[in-house]
Length: 287
DNA sequence: GCCCAGGTATAAA
DNA sequence: TTTATACATGGG
Image (cartoon, rainbow, N blue to C red; front, side, top):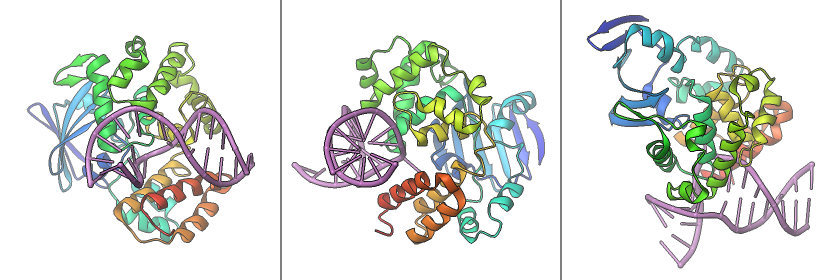
């Protein structure tokens, strides 16, 4: 990958395993706006970034070399060798091979811990366009204004919000969950560093102790908001890719998925199958 | 009107 | 322990 500056932009060329549309639209991120095909505006870490991709060339703007190294390189997970990861998880596994072939340009974004907690609380029983709208509502109402938009609100910025006020922002029945997450965070019970130090099963327990956070949300927070590589190949990422298959309408029998889940996740097979069943039901597959 | 959403808490079996 | 259902709101 070659990096060069051009005016206020940074151009990355020779990039592989990177498809910005797949990365943003696969459901891991809710703060982006599509400007045109393969051209998006992203809000993250109190900054707004435009990203445009033309085959193996990606333009970031505004972006300096220093900013790229300090923030966006890690945000887009460019330090990870995805060929290697894909090789490992698809080894002797035609199912995973098919999953990867379906969306080979997905990379797991490293997003903000607190924002992921609230975002995935909001995501439950909700649709992506609506989730995006709610996150934007929260940012405009409580977040710090930044050039061209609003940062996602910190816990203390959300502290004053009542249930009714949160409801006005279309959070629905999730308002009480947000409130609990806020007070738990203010009480110092959702410290990213302390949770990061725990093994993933313990981290999951900490997260699910928040009213309104279950296994699915906890896993998404760990994967997308904590940069946890220990859940990376073994857990959510695989569910994620599988769900992409469903979204893409690939035709894989439910039975095959269940066998796969049992092999792959062992003691988590029950949960995995629950997800799979849910996805199957959503997409009217196999039942 | 009716059904459903990338779930979770809760009640009931 | 497992299974069924309500939930706010908007869109098909």
